[in-house]
Length: 242
Image (cartoon, rainbow, N blue to C red; front, side):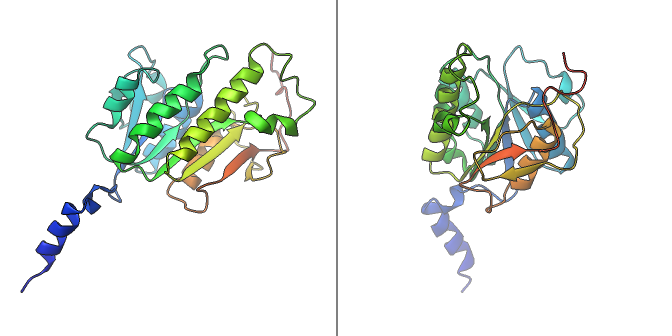
């Protein structure tokens, strides 16, 4: 008797077939931005199946010619985020979105929407690009004028809320925090790293942030950790920066 077909049907009936397939794709939020586009380019070059969530008005020029799928919506609209996951199968979500400092509580709300929908789509990993100084991490940097820059402390609390929401989703989450980022197109110095020392703050390049993203994708060693992306050889401001 051939029992294998019956076993497959039994597994499907239990819902075991609802987990993400090994070849399921990656959904990227913020993929048309400077950091997001760098990540998307590297994902495509790596042969990944990539879907980018974009606003109707998003400029897709940075992704021109890349083999990606698009889903259109606004992250602050819960129904649009729900639609992005509806009937889809993603193994990973990468959140590289950036919002104006005055747009609060953008990160809290949008992360709640993503975290609520990701499990049903089979997502097995979330990689979130956050900010050094989020929440209690600010106490590690007493010389930074968090309270003297209008809106900055509230923004850091908003970032912290997003981290909590993603980690509370039950999906293995990787948080990569960055501080000041060198201008778009700056090549890697070759000296950047991900550190679990949350007292570290240095500039970083978008290229290195993208490289770290791919290194952590599907990498269980990254899951559940909060990293600070650092490069001690970079200074601020960059040469020629105005």
